[in-house]
Image (cartoon, rainbow, N blue to C red; front, side):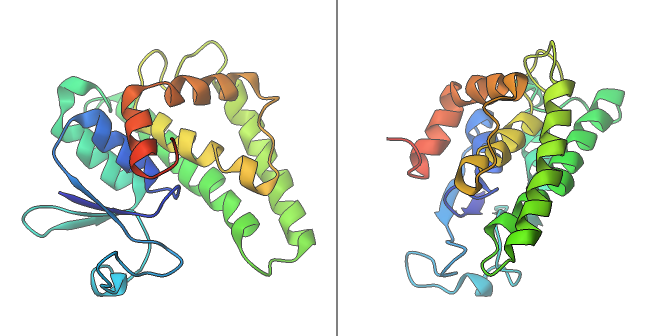
Amino acid sequence: MKLYYSHGACSLAPHIVLKESGLPFEAIAAPTKTHKLADGTDYYSINPLGYVPFLVLDDGRTLHEVPAISQYIADQVPTKQLAPANGTWERYKLQEWLNTIGTELHKGFSPLFTPGMPAEAKEIAKTRLISRLNWVDGELAGKDYLMGDTFTVADAYLFVVAGWGKFVGVDVSGLDNLSALVARVAARPAVQDALRAEGLLK
């Protein structure tokens, strides 16, 4: 398998999941600013959409999007319990979380990273985002992870997205439950391996 990623982008989530899975894979940097690989290859020639993550299987099949890629990886190693079994209520709750993180949080950060976005629009986006993060913090009360006591692919995604706050002035330090989850995930050896591989941890 090959995972195309950009340092610190949402692709860090499936990068973490791959490290957690123990499956063999190759991580290939595809910077979203240049769209050029280290060997000079135009990333658009590999992925016409030009964004990350992008997973290429050994047989040439491909997957886009954090939720799809992360669940695919998890299902290859069911004993790792990175996702509940397909068809269970818990799996639908996991998908609910992945969609919430993707649409309400991940996309909520987008205006804050967009060059030329008017300040007023950024403030509106920030207010909405903080309200969503407050809700997530409440949902984490009494739990170690989003699904309870067990780390899943949703926690990897939330860890990455919540970490963007420090770059755009969204302070989550007062959200005790979310901050505790972020610290808990950051301490995992596989997460540290992924951060180190992307040059985000010395």
